[in-house]
Length: 466
Image (cartoon, rainbow, N blue to C red; front, side):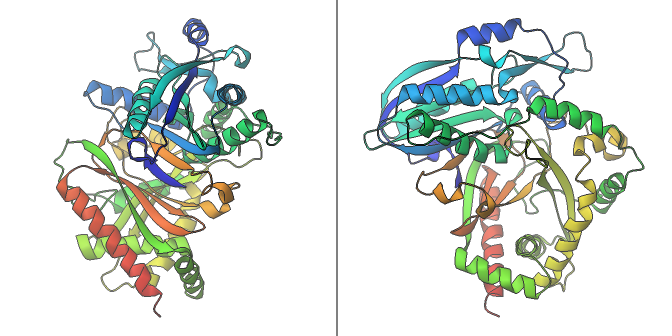
């Protein structure tokens, strides 16, 4: 599985079909009163960011998606049935968020309809070839994937002769990166069931908005005396005056934001990963900690940084019922990795391993709850358009269904937008270790991101020669 922008996908020629919530469903949603559900912490932050970006006439890369192939011409009716069953299965897909005109603080209210009232309309978009397919999909997905006042997702299909492709796109408030994997597994299985190729019984699933209310209620127990607050405070003090996120110059002045371009790097082959993992174990480190250490050394050697700082996502799917839930079930840990001038790759890797162990104290406390408690100390505003960059690690070898990724040409996709920082996704698959990142489109940023990951890759490969 590779993360790829829609406009860069190697798509097939064929007839294009779009599935969106029907006019009847949209009308029912428009009339639906606010319910008692509040957005989760992550949803709330995301939606406020959307509003803040709108106020300055900008937009962030606000949506996620996926595509995968199926054999033969597309059975459009089967896709319609499969997609309908899928959106009715997940509570987060049943509604939208709206501004509360009675609340001066800009609170958002949740509006939803009953799942049995949620229907999808099928719209043929004509026959297209080559880049036309990408552009048609991108246009319609960009129009559809807006969660404020309406349903913020769409599903599409491209029907070819020998094979067809199914697409799905949803605003970030409907799902996280794991939700992309989940959507692929469920949509592919439901479609296969509808065309009679297999029979799959979906496991019970917890509703995300139900989960969000429980998360919020649970978070209220965490006050200033919780150890996570001290960990976050230490992170803030350690980084006083330092820049979070990508450590090299991006050629961006304060307050500027640039169009994001995707960049990816093949870091190691599967055989090299296995060898490095064995060496890491001998050195009392772990494979991920060595990868992070290589990035920290790149920050030191190329940018003169004394520390490498980033936010690391961690999953909050801790029960069998939440594992298959569509939603944004992620917390972030603040990671500050000091890099001494004389430190070696494995010196830093051991420190990284311990830092992640120490950071576990933050896992149960939503980062936005921390900001509520210590907002003044951090100088953090939910209305701000700036967010520190993330560096995420995913071991795809552990994901059920990964053995079909290659044959199905499964890709994750991302939206378009502007930013002033670099987000990094580290992906280990059965065939390789690669990095995908979104980079502000300046000559300095593109050159320095390339130099950074090339250097880190060479460091890792150099460790294999011992």
